[in-house]
Image (tube, rainbow, N blue to C red):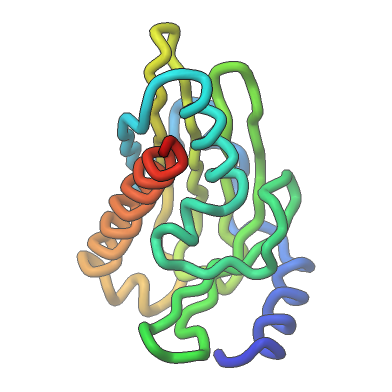
Amino acid sequence: MGGKRALRRAYARACGDAPSYREVGATGEGALPGGYRVFRRRIRVGCGQDAFERAGAYVLGWGVQRGAGFGVYPGVPAVPGATALVVLRPPGLPWPRLVIPCRVVWTVRAAERIGFAYGTLPGHPERGEESFVVGREADGLVWFEVAAFSRPARWYARLGGPLTRLFQDLATRRYLRAVAAAVRERAH
């Protein structure tokens, strides 16, 4: 898929699609559903109110995805019901290689938690949901957690098997590092 016109068409299509899985919102409920590959990864990103606010703003502005090397189209904030395309581009090439449609299914902005989750739409290589949440504990410790459940939805994701899981794990590590780095950079 290439060019801005193709992105606009893909975005218009995605806006009309319903999530490609039944358990919409499950990442916000604690226990992740069975029948999927599930995981939670967490990293300490700082301490105190300032670190919490910086990390939360970064997450809600799609900084996690951008910091991990993905594009996000369009650049709208993460609000419930927002549709976005997460775009993987090969280095040095102007057109997208993989366009991943998703919808924000919930957000949270509370005294101890800030974040959101998006769910897959038809055309996404996986079927499921992923959340990105910054939390603050009573002692001021600030952490960032990614939680997800997914299973292959496209032939190449099924065929990729272990490589698909490796790619997901790599992306998750990049998400965690991106938030930690953003909080450190903004502290100085």
